[in-house]
Amino acid sequence: MTKDAPKRNGEEEPREPSRLVGGCVLVVLGGGAVAVVIAAAPAAGVLLVWALGAGALWRAVRQGPVSDSSATPPPVGVAPLGDVLADESAEIARVVRIAEGVACIVHPVRTEVPQKEVAS
Image (cartoon, rainbow, N blue to C red; front, side):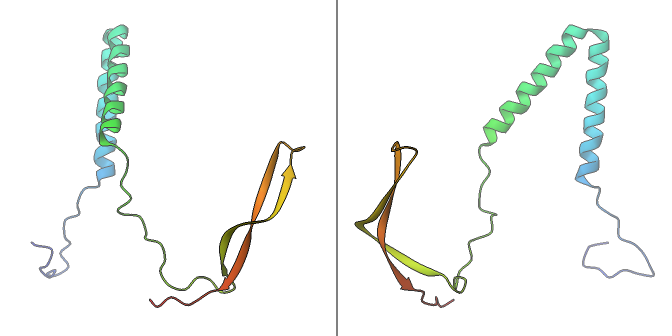
């Protein structure tokens, strides 16, 4: 029966097996195999665990960084009410010294501009 076909007389469509269940089965089987190797020869078991860890690390590094293509795009449109945009100039309004003269904060002259609505 295809997915598009209607159900007949209370028939249920077969469910797809979960990927999580498959992963758990593989982890249990792999853990059992590692336990058998460790029981037979502890040194070989330790080397097997190290090799599996190195292989997992190599695979993770080879895949590279995760893409942002599925990230939610930034909102487009009007900024929240009450916000103003500011234009900074090269002129200095004031300098605030902090940490006993070791550092300072330079505040430029800012001209506040009322916000314009962006057409969406």
